[in-house]
Length: 266
Image 1 (spheres, rainbow, N blue to C red):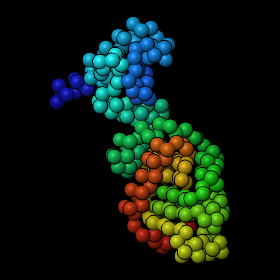
Image 2 (tube, helix red, strand yellow):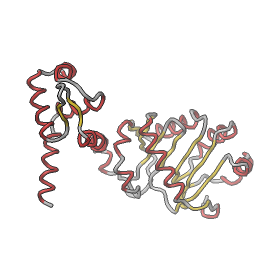
Image 3 (tube, helix red, strand yellow):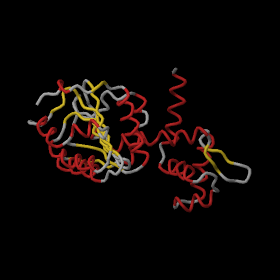
Image 4 (cartoon, rainbow, N blue to C red):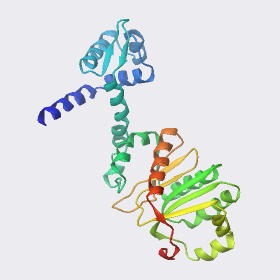
């Protein structure tokens, strides 16, 4: 095992260079490049770039073809896919000092690089505003995994559902719900929408990670000290970020139980 760790540490040493990382990602953007355009794009000398190309080639991350162009190897491409996870965690190192991934399966943690395009939004007022904008921008669906049901967001989502937007949500058995919720649901026509299939809902024993998304935007709130934290979120309208949130929602949806009203306490 020691030999394996030594080999991995050698690869990390090759990646511990800003210019070598830039070279890898330039080749990822457009595979097969000659040294001259690479040097020009990087604002570096040919000699300097050549030295780093040699190191990357010796490490098996890139290869030089017969026509003098460089391209990524399978290993190099895979490393470029893995680097965004390190980028995401390093960018938000302070946030993850007191937040974690909670009960999220390892397969989603391994895909954390997909969240690197997200912007960090802090403060309950700002997170609720962005949450509401995800509702307002929805044309097809709204999916949610909820630790509590914010009263301020009831009217905006109901309006969207009545205009034809599909609503599916998963709620925690211990979710905090507004006082007088059932009376409000009855008066609003919520149960009619539930009956005609416009709304579907399921339940989990507990929810640590909160997700809110429509067909083009997504938000994710990671837990703090083992509890859901709605005061900070990551938001993006990029496809790769949205894909992570959608896949996570679907995973939880198919692993959740039926909704039981008697579990919720006002």
